[in-house]
Amino acid sequence: MDKRYQVFISSTFVDLVDERREVMQALLEMDCMPAGMELFPAGNEDQWTLIKGVIEQSDYYLVILGGRYGSMTEEGISYTEKEYDYAVELGIPVMGFVIAAPDNVPVGKTDKNEAAAAKLDEFRAKVQTRMTKDWKNAEDLGSKVTRGLMHLIKNNPRPGWVRGDHAMTPEVQVEIAELEAKVAKLEKKEIEASASSVALIDRNFAHGQEVTDLEVIYTGYLSGDVEDDLTQVGSHSLTWDAIFDTLGPSMLDEATERALRAKLNSRLVVDLWARSESWTEDVQDLSVDITDESWGSVVVQLRALGLITNGSKRRPVSDKAVYWKLTQAGDDYLVSLRAVPSAAKHQHDS
Image (cartoon, rainbow, N blue to C red; front, side, top):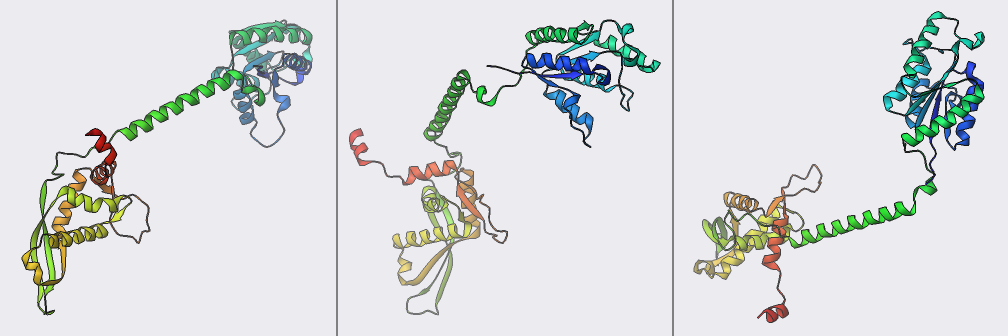
């Protein structure tokens, strides 16, 4: 895969125009992408923010030192040195190119300010603590950059840049296909495991065919006399399976507590008539209502068993109803109660 590397060129500008041009030409001949102050557009945008962004995107950093320290920032450091320090801080591979004979630099290309000249000496010493090469003139600098950068690339591999249509190599395509296959396999295993594992209820609490006594209120009127009301408190026994078998289907989605309670009351009426209680023969419009206390006990028990939980669908603020729904354990348990096994399988097993 062909990679191109972005190389940041840092130096003073006016005194090194020819040298920078030579370096840029050398980088282009190496299929590298030079980046430097020549490429920065004029504008009101904070210049240092722009420079930082370009350095961060660069693979390598080259600093060229001639006879000038350069214009300084408010902190009293030249932009060139500030760029150098930032590249070092980021861990970008750097290489310095220092003029071989500083004393021979033409006066017009040197600092006339003694303070700036001293800062340049200090900066030169800092750069020379890392990999550096001396240069004599523009042509010499160009050839030194070519050889130096080749060495830098060989010993300090960097991500580089790749054309979008070249990035997806056959090797990468194979690797992606293998990863996609692994993900699909893991997802299949997860689905199968989820389908094969049945969530269990908490059997530490009364359940199944164990019986509970529900406190109920019977209401109606005696046959032939609508004015003779019947209202009395009584007790009605049901198994926990019977209660859940009655309420469960309504909670496959979500159901209000009021609707569930009405469902259980209807079951109690049917169950009462089925028992052929003698006293019911003379009662018309019989209804059975579970008391608040017993209904609360039913809800608590089903929650304790892990069969139901509060509804979670978003509803209007005006809806003050309490909603209940099945848990996964509740759904699985309802299926075990309600699902009809295959007759063919039963015959085969027998």
